[in-house]
Amino acid sequence: MRDTSERRRQISAMLKSRGSVQVIALSEQFGVSMQTIRKDLHYLEEHGIATRAYGGAISSEVVTVNTEPAIETKRVEHTEEKERIGQLAASLVKSGESIMLDSGTTALQIARFLPDDEDITVVTNDFDVLSALTQKRNLKIIMLGGELRRKSMAFYGAQTVAALDELLLDKLFLGVDGFDVERGITTHYEPEAQLNRKMVETARQVIAVTDSSKFGKVCLNRIIDISELDVLITDSAAPDFIDDAAEKLNIKLYKA
Image (tube, rainbow, N blue to C red; front, side):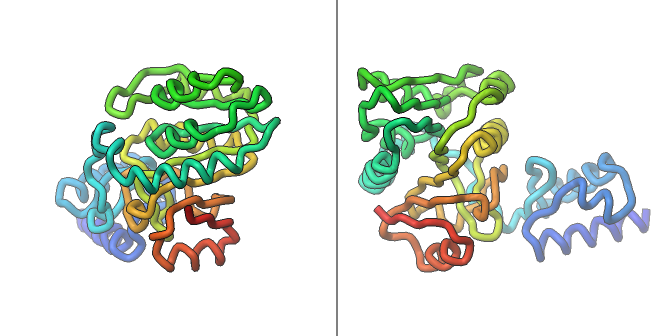
């Protein structure tokens, strides 16, 4: 029992210093099974120290976004910034390219401003994005199937992920719920994080699109480190530390 208590104390200290831990790494470090580590993390979660996440846990002190806003709320928040971001992002799409539009209200703005070019192919899992794309007569559209999550009006699940297996795309426009320089790009919904990671694998270029309200926020489920981004498109209110991070990591930064 003393070994268990000491291990949990050390994991708590690691959470406090690092912000997050991973099950596999802890299992190797302490020489115990992953099941044992999961029990430790469950114990720490019950005591308010950790919040479980995909493959590990995040310190409860750094999970700053606990609830996901309803889609109706997202549609009326930061609308001017999202429109400018969408217009700028759409201008980066060239004839002959294939692109992926992630779910979300910023992706919806990109869809609105895309050129109506028959040599552009757009892939999406978002119902509202699809509706905007169908207003254009010439674009080639691929809709990913799966189970509809009504809270976000987008499709997720194993079927959605599997549909990407045979696709190779030029650009991914990735929306975010949380963007933290140290803890990466995060989202509220685990199946979305899984799908987004698969999207990243299929794309030659990964472009994050987010208004400045998302910077410094951390959600439960991690998608990727920001070092995996090629481009970041945000608005003019982005804090200075975003400029510094982009320069350090060689991420091309646009401010709409």
